[in-house]
Image (cartoon, rainbow, N blue to C red):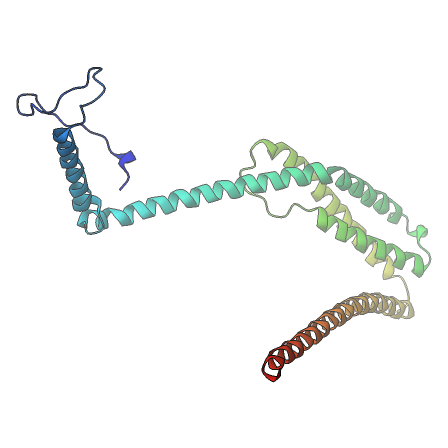
Length: 252
């Protein structure tokens, strides 16, 4: 047990303990045979109390241990929640400071595109509209990357900054939804042939992305195989060398 959790005193009298004498400065008892015996008695009492009440063989300890462990577990869980909250608050604060200007620029860009789409005469060619759709898809990905994701209920001092950032994000998402609706509406005015062209162009775009990823993983796989072949050759050479060195000792 920990003696840091204990305190107390022993009341003795000089009448029944004549051999226990105070030091001159009253800073303790003179070290002699009687004081050593007295110290041993006190220590044995404490050890016996520990065994009887809080030792491993104590029934009281068994009864209280579950309660103590539950209390400690609850305290640890609470401290872990506080650590996670502080971590999330730092993440959100850093993200807002880093991305606020980018989000404002993106929101403004969405507004300009929405104004451009308000006049249907600005896009008379299918190619122009498809190119705009590709640009919007890229901007949509950028907006998703700027999102803060889920946030804790208690944000502390960054609550105001978070609400301003969230309002910017909501505004940008609203404009993006309006833009996509306008683009799809404009695409509906083209002929069936143009619809086929749209699907074909979208397929080529998606296929190009997929082929790029396949090439990337293929090159990575080749490099891994190359490294493994080199490692295998090295192991083979070292094994052959060790074999010849070992057998040459018996042949010489």
